[in-house]
Structures are given as structure tokens and as C-alpha cells.
Image (cartoon, rainbow, N blue to C red; front, top):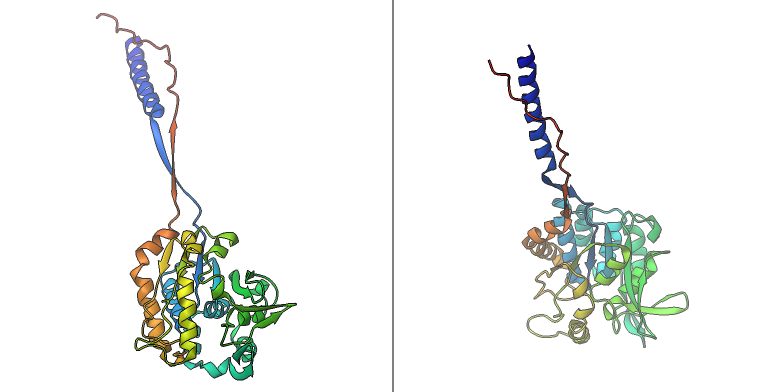
Length: 314
């Protein structure tokens, strides 16, 4: 009986020492972090900005979350509509029907050739809410102070007038008065408003930049093509302002599309889809939570003091 007890005790001692050796080894534990917050910056481009709908459509189809939106000019219209609760199917339907006359009218003024005051009625029907605070997704709208040239990011209060101001392309549209200041197109200060998204809290930024060429491939047709092309050339020198804040840059191929080609909405939306799908691997990487690996090394348990006792001689 005594010999059996001592043998059992020896086996238990060996098992215990093996357990403490395993426990004392270094272990690595992977702890998934919180998903990065994604922001998308929608640049200007007049009718060609309908390509933004195609980009958003791909993000929607691929379940890529959008936590913040910032828009300039036409990007502010599409951004406001999307953030108010419209899905891309609804945006496509509107894009196929909208024309220049729906939000602008020709006028005679020393400030421009057209007014976008009709846009107030258009946006009133389009948007599912009237203020920034009611939006489903936080939005920033870029505009430019007409007197000082200072860039302005609207993020609170009434939604319609800041969007109108963001679309008031100088030389074509009259400035929009908000408070005691007059504002024109946000493209003059924030061609692609990526900076605002970082300030809003975005961890990763997708920027949608449209081609700098405003004229058709055969050259400018009229004064508006000339004005647009001049501003587009100037805006290319402003890339340093938004490039550093961008993680993925999407550039739909809008060459050959004129500034007022609203009748080619379906083609422009497809161009946006194509550009976004080409960069899906990079976009998916943005939303993948980083994994933090922690290494723990437990202290080896002290020796038990139990010595192996030789079995008594038979």
C-alpha cells in the first residue's frame, strides 16, 4: 500500500511540474481593436459630380460604413441628400431626371449670369431634413467667403443655404448671403474637403477627386468652359491641402463629360462605380480593425519541494 501511494505521488508530482512549465511559457494574445471611423470627401465638378453617386453605391453594396461626409459644390448636394437618409437607388432616380433649370435661372447681374435660388425649392423637396443636426450622418459643407477668400465649413444650423453657397460657382452664379457675409463655391478653398473629416473624427479618409479638365476634348465651347478650366487648373496646385489627409483617392474618369451634361447621368454614375470597384481592396483595408498583439509571460511556479522518493527495495 505504501509503495502504491508513493508511486501515485511521484506521478502527480511529474504532472504538476509539466503544468507549471506550460503555464510559464510566453503567450501572445490578439485583441481586436475598434473599427476605424470612415469619412468620405466629395469634391466639386458640377454635373460630373454625379459620379459620386456611383462611388457611394459601391460602398453601400459592399457594406463599407460611412461615418462622416464632407462635400464641396455638387459634392455638398449629394452629401446632404445621402446624409439626410436617401439611399443610392433614390439618388440615381433623381439624377436621371434633374436638369440645370431645376436649380438655376439666368439673370443679369454684375455678380454673375445665373442665380441658384431655385435650388432652395429643389433641396426642400430632395432632402429628408432641414438642418445639420437632423442628419443621419454628420456632414460638413465647404464654401468660400467672397470678400476675404477664407474657407468656411458649415456643420450646424440650416442646411439649404450653405449647400447653395457651396455651389455658387463664381462668374456663373451669384454669391449667396448667409448672415452678413457673402459666400461662393467651396472649390476655391476646399477642392476636396478631406481636412474637415479629420477634424470631425474620421480615422480613415476616402477622397473623391474629379478631373481638372472642364472643357470637352475639342476645346472650350463658351465662356463658362473657359472660366471653369481656369479655376480647375488653379485647383490642381491646391492638392497639397487635401492629399496628406487622404488614405484612398478615387478619381473617376470624367474626361469627355462637359460641366452641364446632366443628361448623361447614367454614364457618370457608372464611371464612379468603376473607379470605386477598382480600389475595393484598398478600401476594405481601411475598415479592417487593427489587431493589437499583447505578449504575456507568466512566472514559473516555484519548485514544490516534493522530491522523488525511491521505491523501497523488494
